[in-house]
Length: 317
Image (cartoon, rainbow, N blue to C red; front, side, top):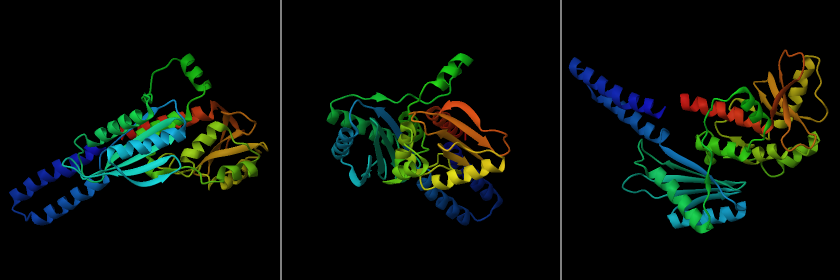
């Protein structure tokens, strides 16, 4: 997408300038608009680099070592909250400076470096990410393992069935979303304190541990992921009431211990049963269905599949 924007902002205007020159038309109005467009693009299309690594360490230790890593890099801390660090890297001859966002969750460290301004970073964001993990591992005294690259593989029917039945790592899925730019730490947040306990008390919890990992990371705001759907902590009470009303219109009733975790555009929803499973199977309903449909997939696999589709669309467009 960025390369298409470069073509529009650089190649096509150059051709337009040549055409106007041949026609004898004044160039300065066009040049003013062109320069303004380049300035806006330098802000909105600034390059970035991100990476995720897993460590055999407690989150508190990882977070302290991440602070030390940012200090060693000379980055200026601008914000620190639960599991999230945000810092600035000073400008240099290659760039106007970068913003570093670091998140620590369940032994996973995710680092994103994004240029403050400019269309090209000359490798500076990659250098920042590499420097951060180098300093982190030096402070921690351990080497992390890289997150598994996200890709769509061709699988046989048996392999696909085994994959859908096996639990997925929610934290790894979230890391892949961050690495793809869908859930950058600077624009996402988990549920506020007390929100999960409220949901459990109202809807007959406790909630599954795999689902709570998702809420703790993205339950307040998931950035560009699941946009247009209702799933955040402040929406879930209304979602559960609305889902029951929607099912009732088709003469159906959700089980008393059903918890609706996702609704899209008010006509379809997904839910699981609060029966003590850490990664429960999910069920779905589409307006007009004659019954509640088992999806044959657990919550963690549902999340992974939805994330896979979202990342594929980002890569294609």
